[in-house]
Image (tube, rainbow over all chains, first blue to last red; front, side, top):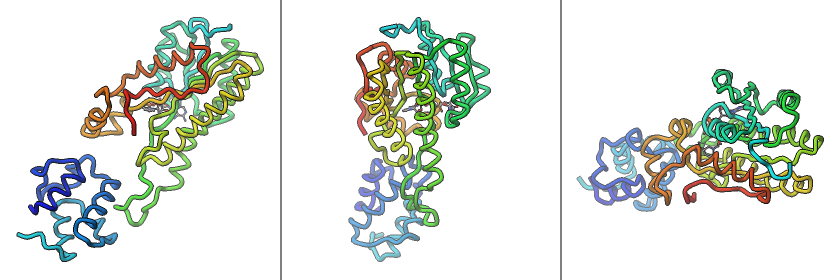
Length: 79
Length: 249
Ligand SMILES: NC(=O)c1ccc[n+]([C@@H]2O[C@H](COP(=O)([O-])OP(=O)(O)OC[C@H]3O[C@@H](n4cnc5c(N)ncnc54)[C@H](O)[C@@H]3O)[C@@H](O)[C@H]2O)c1
């Protein structure tokens, strides 16, 4: 897992970095509601200097879908 | 009666068949007050202990509220205490970014929450205060507000309704004080009730507990005690009493 992304997600969701794994989904994180989704969007846009549109935002319901969305936006998260 | 003695009082508790309302009704009945409970839930009304009179009533219905208030007055001669407790906790974000087709807070649900939590307090208070004024009862109105009145994220309608309850309480305390009628509110934080447990999952409850200086949820009896203290202290008027373990939102 990319350290920048893991640390951002840990901060947004109030989790420890080691809890941020690709299989983690919205259903696993009690605080991940539509307000947290806005926090997530703003943090990702700021950290990776990009603009997410509504379909991207709706798609991001797991760590793996966040990684995919960032890849589609041309963000290089390394291996 | 100059000072309101609970053991000589007649009280009406709305939404008193369950949850916080039932705890308040039980506390007042335990101090000797003649307690009438009104509630939408007919089954819970039927299950009330014999120490309380129960009436099935939707407190958002003006006509039915007047009828039930008249019945209670006929039975007991007056109402000294009105506790406006009936309410429905409601959460919906103003913007739901995950639902692009219906992104904004639904207006009908906004109206329904305002009716349930704000209009209800207006309707019951006006029905009861009319009788207090006519019968020259130096009574007291206590409305159950909420910590959300400060503006709680995800609760536009509920927060607005409870802030409205606080504003009506202060307004009425000024208007009615000259007739010896006092109006106060009690604003609970997070209380350990079935409604809190069903509205919030375990990890959110843990989060709330760790942010509360007292590190726990409140007990329903602690809200009931606060209600009783603003009733019995004859110089408390226009106050919104926080019962939240020191939590701020
Ligand atoms: N539980 C909490 O932590 C908490 C915190 C802050 C404020 N409050 C407030 O305390 C009050 C009681 O909450 P609770 O947690 O006990 O809820 P609850 O749902 O357990 O009880 C509410 C009662 O009110 C009744 N009711 C609802 N709408 C009604 C209507 N239109 N007419 C008649 N009866 C009606 C219900 O049938 C129920 O018996 C509410 O006003 C709520 O906003 C609760």
